[in-house]
Length: 157
Image 1 (cartoon, one colour):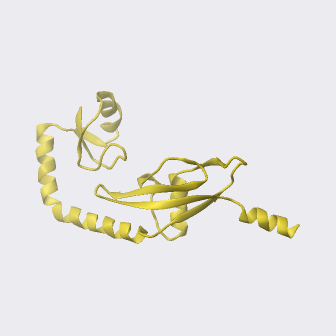
Image 2 (image 1 turned 60 degrees about the vertical axis):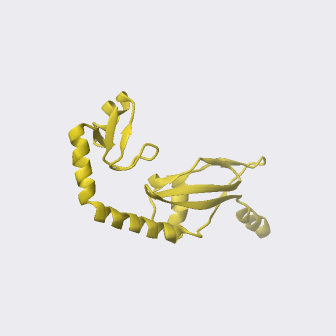
Image 3 (image 1 turned 90 degrees about the vertical axis):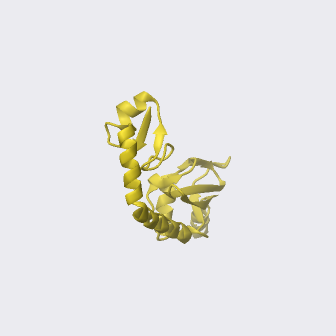
């Protein structure tokens, strides 16, 4: 089933993209929730005309996305987590935690535009922030064991 997306859906496509999906996914979820419309010939013509008229606005949106991505250049995150003796974390480090750490550094980024695999052990990883369909920034994430607090507690005793 061919549909036109009305909003960005990570893993599927971006607003105004024409994508093929399984019929059930389109009929039962995307179209009823307003996230997509059926890509008929008339809908494709309307989309082409709208894109032509919005070209200037879309260029401004892309420039803003590039500016935000440039601000993230050089930013590295170090996240302290509790770990077991084997080096496995209690819980996992995910996009929500990365968004929270970025907020602490002064970057207001929605967790929904951050993609990464859930981190379940100590090491160096990468999180990708999708600002625009053509603009993304990669943020290095270093997961370390939470030792500073333990050392302070033992020093106090």
